[in-house]
Length: 171
Image 1 (cartoon, one colour):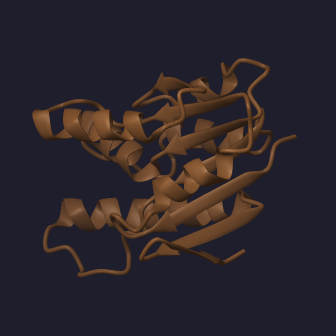
Image 2 (tube, helix red, strand yellow):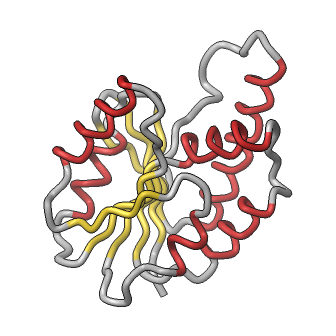
């Protein structure tokens, strides 16, 4: 059974870079990308992320069904990076209008984490440390992201907070 490492932190805090560093010693690795190229700025971000990755990664683009992506990893994969949970939640919210911890996609993902197919490094944003959002939809997103992060942290073997590019071990 694989171990789970959760990496959290603010925007541009070095989460993804640190996840790549952790996976660098493995020969067989996968990168499960949740971002969708919805506009030119996002296409450029995705392109930069791809260039930052070791070419030995297989890339799986899965904006919605993370459990399916995990269940269908090739058996030789030693480590998979999921980047990132908050983008994934945004995708779910965008398509459904509302997302909760009871959402079938969320529940399937959490069940998949109970028996990971390989070591997992999961990247997520810490969204509860800033200003309280002014609109209900943004507050709802912040709340579900916080609850999901707590549940994944509970299931994780390690939790790392990145601050100014520096990893801080939380668990």
